[in-house]
Amino acid sequence: MPNKCPFCEKGTLRASSREELRYSGGKQILVAGIEYSLCDVCGEESVGSKQARANMRAVADATLSSTGKWTTAQIAEFRDRHGLTQEQAADLLGGGANAFSKYERGEVLPTKAMDLLMRLYDSFAEVRAYVGRGAAPVASVREAWSSAGAGVVSSADSNVFKIGRMKLRPSSLVVANDADWHYEPHSELKYATR
Image 1 (cartoon, rainbow, N blue to C red):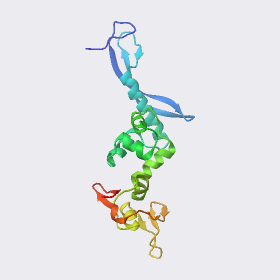
Image 2 (image 1 turned 30 degrees about the horizontal axis):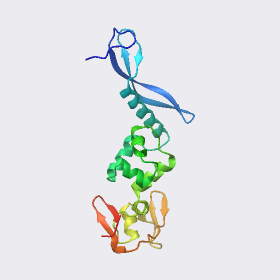
Image 3 (image 1 turned 30 degrees about the vertical axis):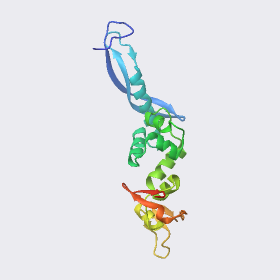
Image 4 (image 1 turned 120 degrees about the vertical axis):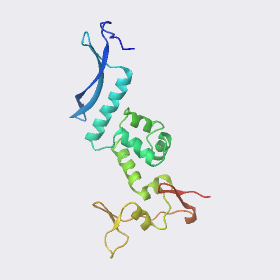
């Protein structure tokens, strides 16, 4: 059943979309896919609640992209990659009980610090170990860095690793009992007594 125009009550609303310029952080950003409905008789435009939610997410994604942060979809993919529910991600990384639900709907934009924490957690086993009190089981810190794609900078100092342009010296993880580290599928390290 077609939607009747609430303005003229004669026409039918047809869904449409367009690009719009918006302002965020003092600069203009182009937002694609702004949804609206157009009356075929009077030409009035309206936006329904479903369209408004989609528009909010489109604006959030354009804003996040313009600042180099992960988009709403990338945040959801990050959670899925690590097998985390929205609630578990919020418990682990912070931001409040509903933070990841709001990030993924585009209702709230993650801070620069949260974006960086998610990227670090995603990229480095040692960060997952520190943040989650465990990550993937490794025989040594060297193995953890190697599994994260790090290469040894030189044979003279085998404790310095290079990822991209960063040179890193891994810290020592202190645990009560090395036997409590165990491997879980998907290269996740866990630290727990059995």
